[in-house]
Image 1: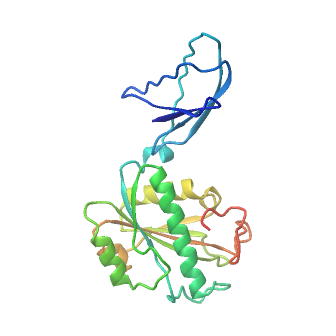
Image 2: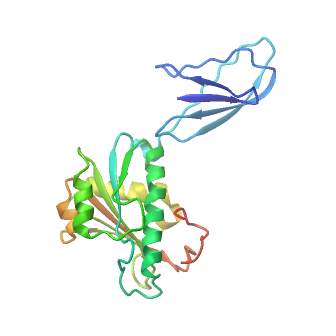
Image 3: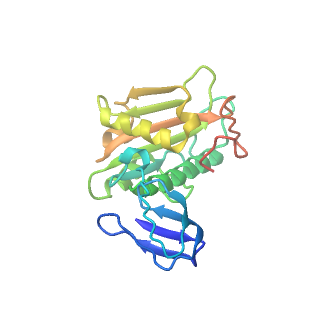
Length: 239
């Protein structure tokens, strides 16, 4: 882990294999320690440094998502891009806006998963149209095992679930990851109704060489989540 001593000329130390670190010649007074490590929540700790005195501190880091993402590989797929259409749901954004929203969520989720210690790839880096075959090919070109996650962000439909979490039939590991991702990424959405389904129809689910997952998040214009097509809502984490 990296340990930074704030208010003392920006001193920085790296922990050894046992997690030990040491600072010398620290001026007396209040100091703050910032401790960080990939896959763990950042920790800030305040302490009082005494003159000519040794002080022992034992900061404890906690893994993000209970360590579920540490060392895992994810391929994130923004389902819609460019002129691809989402459908004709009530109050649905324009096709270009749909693509931008999906890509924004995927990029934010990439940052979150990398912070949690995962290796993350994207099927597309820009808001461009890609058909299913091209997205599956991009996923399968990534060597090694891992998880494929398709993201579909769109408009809320009254009477329908806010979130649909899909995975290959009977795959309980996939269901666990979907719920862990939702809980870490957006607590407000996680606390709404989530419907988990087995998906044996979607080409992406059945054709990738990764463990395939899909999240359909229907939160734009939601009366509780307060997401709006044109701007940031109170619970948004993606744009």
